Amino acid sequence: MLSMPFLPSSLKGGPAAMLLSALSLLLSPALVSASSAADYYVHSLPGAPEGPFLKMHAGHIEVDPSINGNLFFWHFQNRHIANRQRTVIWLNGGPGCSSMDGALMEVGPYRLQDDHTLKYNEGRWDEFANLLFVDNPVGTGFSYANTDSYIHELDEMAAHFIIFLEKFFELFPEYANDDLYLAGESYAGQHIPYIAKAIQDRNKGVAENGGTEWPVKGLLIGNGWISPTDQYPSYFKFVEREGLIKPGTSLYDNINVLNEVCLSKLETPAAKNKLDLGACEFVLEQFLRLTTENHECYNMYDVRLKDQEVSCGMNWPPDLKKIEPYLQRPDVVKALNINPAKKSGWTECAGMVHQAFTAKNSIPSVHLLPGLIESGINVLLFSGDKDLICNHIGTETLIHNMKWKGGTGFETSPGVWAPRHDWTFEDEPAGIYQSARNLTYVLFYNSSHMVPFDNPRQTRDMLDRFMKVDIASIGGQPSDSRIDGEKLPQTAVGGQANSTAAEESEKERLKQTKIHAYTKSGEAALIVVIIGVTVWGFFIWRSRRRVRRGYKGVSNNGTSDSTSILSRFQSKPSGADVEAGDFDESELDHLHSPGLEREHYAVGEASDDDEHVSHPGTGENRQSS
Image (cartoon, one colour):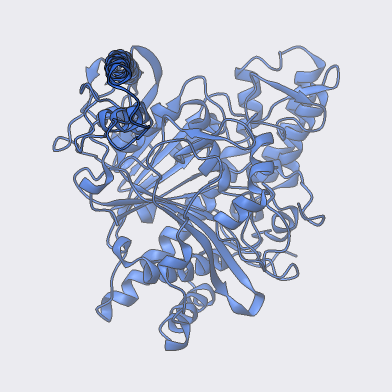
C-alpha cells in the first residue's frame, strides 16, 4: 500500500517541520563556516581559451553532516551589469545527473573543443547574470554523501538546498540581494518549484527577524518533467504526430494498446500524485524497442537522430564523450577545489542517487506552480520540438489544464485564449511565444531535449528578455529578434553581441587590425635594417680611418650596440596603440572587443557503484537537463 503523499511544505507539518529545523540549525553559531570565499577561488582552469580569465569560484558546501552530505557548486561572475544585478542558478535533471552538463554543454561560458581544450560558448548566460551551477542532490556529479544515505524525497532535497544557499550567501554576501532566477531542465522541473517554495517559506521566517530575503524573480524550466498525468499521454501523441508510427500498422496498434493501459492507470486516484508510473513508462520503452532496426534505435532526446541499440540517446549529445575525461583530469579536479573526501571521479549521472530518489511521498511540482505564479514569480517554460522524453505536447497540455490567477491555461478571458506569436531570430524562424498572467511558453523549432545545446544564442536572447535586461547604458550591437515581425529591444553588448552579424563584423575588425599591425611591424623591421646598415657602414668608415692613422688597439667602450638600438626601438608605449610605428606583435595576444573591460563593472576514475539506470518516465535516463 502506498503512503499518503506529502502536501506542500506550507500545508503539512512534517516537511515544514523539517525545513524549520534546518533553519533553526542555520541560526546556530556552531554552523558558521571557517572557510572563506578565497578558499573557493579558481586561480586557473586547464584548457581555458586565451583572453581575460573569468572570475569564478568552485568547491563543496556541507549541507548535512549526519550523512556527510556536500553539494558542489561552480560559480561564474557576470561579465556585465545591465540595469541591475542578477544571479541564475542552473540545475540539471536525472534525478542524479550533474549540472556540469549545463556548465560545459549548454549555458556556461565555456564548451569543450576536445577533451582537454575549452572554447567560449557563443550563447553564454553569464553576460548579464552571475551563473551558479549546483550538482544536486547530494551524491550527484562532484557532490557526495555516504552511499547508504542518499535522499529520497523532494522536500529533503529542498531543505538541503536552503542550507546550501544560506552558507553560499554567507561566503559571498555580495550576491545575496541579487534578483534570483532558478533555471534548469528535465527532472529539474520538479526541483525548481520545490526550491522556490522553500525559499519563500524561508523568507517569511527571516523577514520576521529582520533578516535578508532572497528575491526570487523568475523560474525557467526547459523540457521539464512537471506533471506526469499530463505528460505521460504525450508519448503516443508525439510519435504519432511526428510520423514515427503509422495508423494501420502493427506497430501503431501495439503502441496504442499500451497507451490505453497507461491512460486507464492515470484515471485511478493513486496516480494523480505519483511522479512515475510503470505502465506509462512502458509505452516509451516499447516504442524504442519495437522501432529498433539494424541495432539502432531512436534517440529519445532528439528523434531526428538514431543511437546504438539499448542506449537510445544515452550516448548523446556528442560533447558528452569530451566532458568525462576532462572533469576527471587531476589538474581540473585540483583547479575546481574538489574535496579529497569525494572518493570517486566525476560521472555524468549517478545510478545509486537515481535509484534512491523515488519521491514516493512527494507530489508533482505542477501543484506548486499556480501558487508560485500568483505570489508574483514569473515562470517561463520552454521546449525543444524534437524531444520525445519530455516533449512539447506534454508541456502544452499541462499549461492548458493548469489553473492560476482566475483562469485556466492561456485564456485571457472566458473562451478567449492568448495568441501564439511567431518568433524569428536573425531572419530565421526560431519558434513560438505565448504568454498570459505571468506564465510564458516558448517553443523552439529544430531543437532537442537540451535546447541551449542546439540554440545557444536564441536561448540567451530568451533569457535576457525574460529577465528584462536593459543595456541602454552599455551600448552594443543588438541581435535581430522579432515577434510577429516587430523588432524587440536590444539584448547584446560590445564584441560579445548576441548577433551573428555583430560577431562577423568584430572578427573582420580584428583581422584588419592585425593586418595593419603586421604592416607596421614590417615597416619597423625595414627601419631597423636601414639603421643597422648605416651603423655598420659608419664603423667600416671609422675603422678604415683608424688603419690609416695606425693601430690603436680594440675597445667596445665607444661603439653602439645594435641590440640596444633594436630594444629601444621596440619599447612598448603605455597606450598599447596598435597603430603606432613601434607596435609590438605580442600585443596581438591582448586584443579584445571594446566594452568588455571587467574593471568597469562592479560584480561581486568513475564509481563502480554508479551504474546508469533507465528511468525514462521521470524525464531522464542518463540525461541531465
